[in-house]
Image 1 (cartoon, helix red, strand yellow):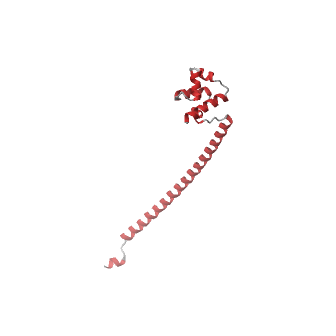
Image 2: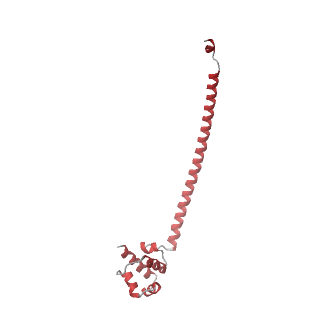
Image 3: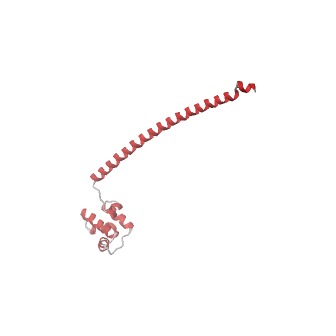
Length: 139
């Protein structure tokens, strides 16, 4: 099933370019009969031959296998969409980073204030423990 689709993609692309089977066969260094079998089925498709066919047809191996051939306009549009999405993502993450930095700064300040409060209270406890209360002196 996959081979059939690839064969159809090869033939469709070749025809779209207006290339005869003879030209592709010559470029591959095989006979017309052997190339015809590639497009029509009896010959097993070999990956290194597919790479060469894709090169001759001016498309990527992915495009040959999947059958998607993008025009320059479609490609540019897809790139613009991806760049726009990337820019949005970068902006989002920059803002998220700023928010996290502010949160860290706030939490650090709070922790420092709590430490100061704890140190102050420890000092007061120590003062109380060291001071002599009148009731303790009388005993």
